[in-house]
Length: 226
Ligand SMILES: [Zn+2]
View 1 (spheres, rainbow, N blue to C red):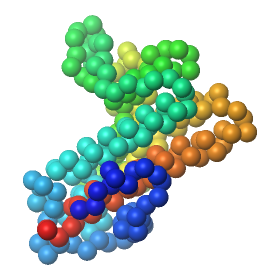
View 2: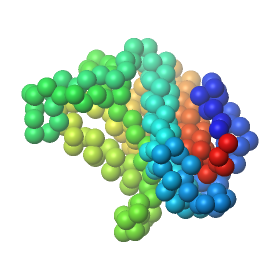
View 3: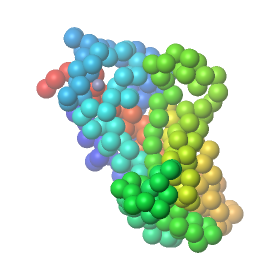
View 4: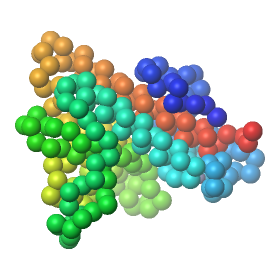
């Protein structure tokens, strides 16, 4: 299996990752293993040719590692752009909806200070627009960004009492509106002549991290056993 952790130092991709991501983006079929089953440890579900099961399969931990990589890259982008420290995994001060004031064990990914000096929580997620529910897939296919918007809405509904940035990416690469606004705001105080380059660089880093992990998740699901 490839080891993307060692390759996350820059925005370059290996040829294998690039080919895999291109196939995923273009909906080209992957070669199935002889038995057609997902190779993620502990899974064994039947694979489809287009990476749809693989990209949602939570067995084996690849999805979690993808989440952590996106969280880590967003943290670095936020610290470099804002100059504020960004801390990991903050327990939220109150419970979710319906239990305001109660202790909570919920932990959100990142915590920092926003442009106005307020405490802000950031919670990352990648969401596949494809669904086993055909009507939901059709809805998302007809409206760009619908899956990311759903992810944002779910997080805001769960934590209505927090100054929250739902940092949601669709698996094919589209960022949710809240995330786009957040990254733009991070660079609001940058010199005007430098801002386009800084924004472009931030998105390139975030996008290449997501695409490398798309490839890793898919390759590890289809790979022949060692
Ligand atoms: Zn699986």
